[in-house]
Length: 123
Image 1 (tube, rainbow, N blue to C red):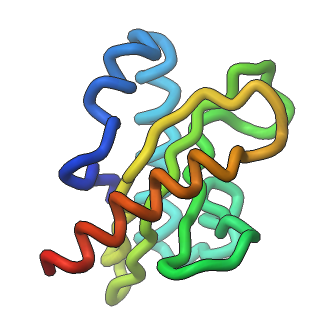
Image 2: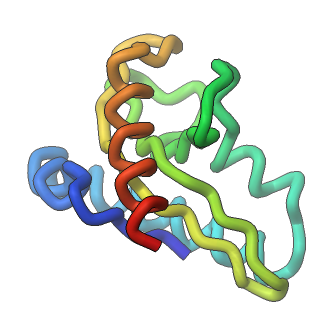
């Protein structure tokens, strides 16, 4: 399941990216739900990959466009909460962005961490 965290830029970012991009993004989210429902964790890693840079909390990258697609690449950074199968996991989106290359900017990761930390403190 895909959810936006309070304090995130997700609502505005979804408006900004336009209708065709939103359709692709939501299709990827439906694929993620299907993979989680059947326990296909290898497929989940294609869509959601953990950001390599360390830190607390862990920030995950939701890939809204497939590998090999032309830029801009739709990405959401957030918190991936694994639940009890089937379909119990949730990706909590903290920051939406359009990547022009393969690297994530530290500033984007920092923004996501700030939003995630605020959310975790309120829980």
